[in-house]
Image (cartoon, rainbow, N blue to C red; front, side, top):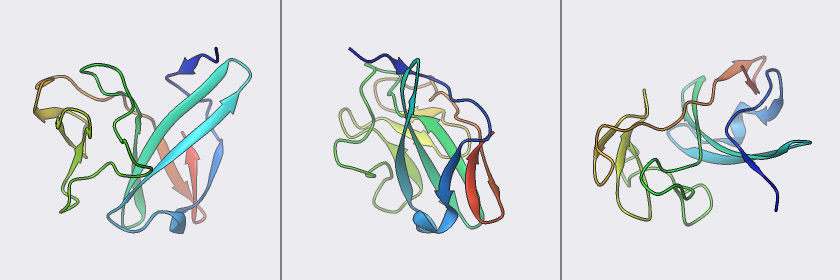
Length: 118
């Protein structure tokens, strides 16, 4: 079984910023020798906020459908399994079975129109 990692090394180029629509989210999988990392990024303008794709309540990935991380209005991150709601800015759960817990941050940055791990 491939180990699921919770961090990536810095300076991994994930792709162009425009692969994520403004106000949308996208899944990323990074293959490394030590295992596989699953994360997602939420874009707002020229910035991205990243998190490890793991719900703090039970541990599964947040999205049941590819890239389906946000509420219908795009204001919050939502776990599709149990409905937990997380603030995009800091990953803190503000509703649902893991209220008060938080997503694990995945540091990302935008440079020259591309998304990189930080």
